[in-house]
Every structure is written in structure tokens, then in C-alpha cells.
Amino acid sequence: MKAIVIFALGLAIAATATVTFAQAMQATQPTADKPARHARIDTNGDGVIDRSEAAANPKMAEHFDRLDANRDGRITAEERPQHGGKGGKGGRDAARARKVDLDTNKDGRFSRDELAGKARALQNFAAIDANSDGFLTREEMKAHHIAHRGERGAKSPK
Image (cartoon, rainbow, N blue to C red; front, side, top):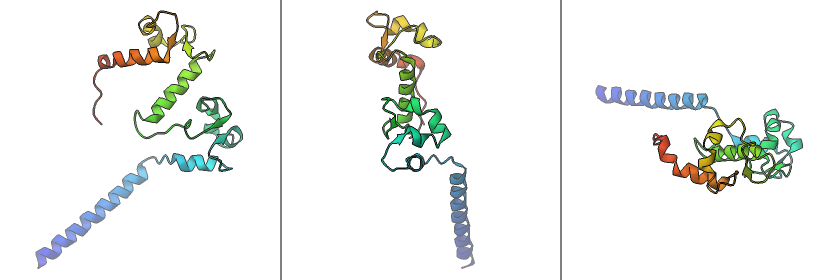
């Protein structure tokens, strides 16, 4: 009987320790509650964040033009980065925004001048420019990326 009581007490202590550890880990993890934060910024509740609403949040205001991909003065849910994990949609959104910023004349192509300071892109410019027209398109860049993905090594499992 004594052994059963000691065993039950040990199980209770282990369960309590597990719950306490889980709570401690949750408290130390950054909580990026993006939808709730964006809802607080969207003061009129229309589902989009306009420039005046973003002005109340310095970080949002600082990145407003980069996030407003279609340049309509409003940031929709589709334009907001979604940080669902490494390499998730947020990564693609951020890369897309950087490319939009690089395309200074907004013609949908990248010239050598627009890529000034981007050594890797300039180094591979001729290889990426499949039709040799002196401009890189998103399609050419994607095709080059897919064709050379294996050269960068296999991704490590999560």
C-alpha cells in the first residue's frame, strides 16, 4: 500500500512539474498575436489598415509603404505578413515587397541599374536573363532559382 501511495505522489509531482514547465516555456516564447494586434490597429474595424490608423503604431507606419503592395493607401489582410514559421507566407510577402521596392520604374522588370548594390543578382544577371533582353523578370528569376536550388545544398529537416 505504501508503494502505491509513493507512486501516486510521484505521478502527481511529475504532472505538476510538466504543467509548470509548459507554462514557463509559454511565458518565455514571444507571442506574436498578429490578428489581435492588427485588430487593435484597425480602429474602425473595416478589416484594412489605412495610413491614419497605421500612424498610431510607429512600426506599422514605418513599413506602411512597403506593406501596401498595391499602393492603394490601405493594407489588407493579404498584404500583411503572415509569420506562420520559417519560410512561410511571411517570407514570400517580405521578398515580394523587397522586389517591388527594387523595381523603381514599376515596369515589372529589373534592370542592372535597379539591382545596383545587389552583388549576387548582378553576378548571376546573364545566367538569369534567359531571353538576353537586359532585364530580369520574376519568371526568369523563379526559373533560375528552381534550376539551381540543388546547388545550394539540401535543406535541413526541422
